[in-house]
Amino acid sequence: MKPFLGKLPRYLDKKKVIIHQDLAPAHRANFTQEFLKENLPSFIPRAQTPPNSPDINPLDYCLWSALKERLNEYQFVPNFKKLKEILMKEWKALPQKLIQDSVASWLKRVRSIEKAKGRHIE
Image (cartoon, rainbow, N blue to C red; front, top):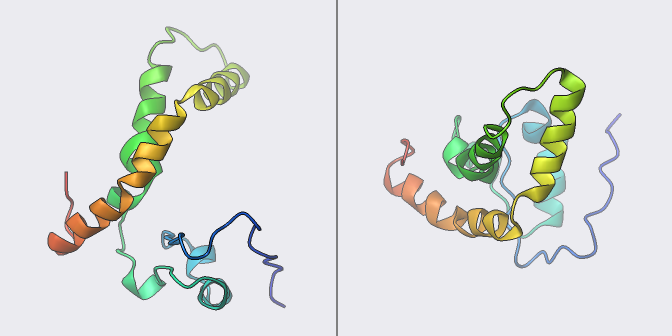
């Protein structure tokens, strides 16, 4: 039985969105690939996804390091519950411009990786 994938959000402009996923099993599953192929004019299929693509994931190339920088300001975190609170607070405090800029740089990064024949670009 196929899992329910639902519908794409109404606010999603299919003409302006390119879906890139990593190669997690749920992302590369046939039903996921078919759903994206049927519902989006532009997505990067698993056959064209680099096996190790942190250079094109905004979380990996920008946001995790920004969050880590913010966490370094805390001298001591006594337990997991407090760490979770701090992470949530600091994640919400990340500037929206940082997030937008990291996503806006995505296509340029993809082209740089392509030019580098899939090798690391930084």
